[in-house]
Length: 258
Image (tube, rainbow, N blue to C red; front, top):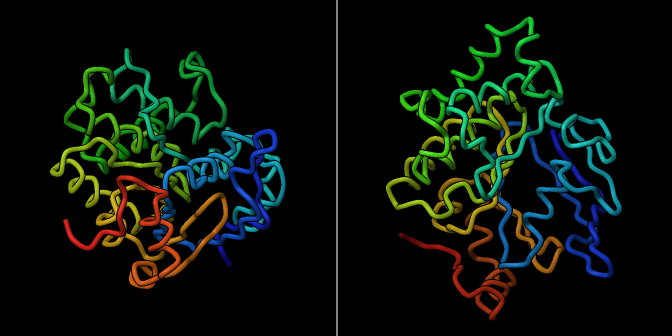
């Protein structure tokens, strides 16, 4: 059974349909990319799945349960977490403290920072936070103020924060955006490792990375699914080529080598 699926999923902003009738399913431990030209509705789609914004129509099922009307914080506790395009950090807190708050949310549900003092499972919270930092190779900067990190480390910390909630599905929205080639390659390796343990959905504009990383790809165009298939099938798809190269995107291409 798919771990996640949507049926006729639609999101409207006024009269504008950012997503329209999206039927989508992901298998457990699949690494699925969602791509498309600028304005295709990718981030909106992820936000609706994560519960950051509500759907206007259709249905979302997670592990066979209808979560369409379940609030985003509850979806995190159920096992569905999202890392954001722009790192969503407490800049004045340390790297470890940022992960610790997320671990507490995953273990005990919705939280406020003051609840840490009343937690009866602090040892488990600390262990989960430390493990998330280790997996993203951030243990060496655990006591550094989050606001002082490099851009690449901030992006990886945002992934670690999502990972610290112990998700079954991890949504990554442009995880290598703004990174140097070296940082991007490092993050690529780390995502591959994560995908061996949990289901990963990823939005990314780096087509070389996507084509080499993904098990399968869904292409959105003008808020609808244009195509789905393996990386090779998507690269060879004429409709996808036209969507990318027909004036709808200025900076993207379908890859083919760095």
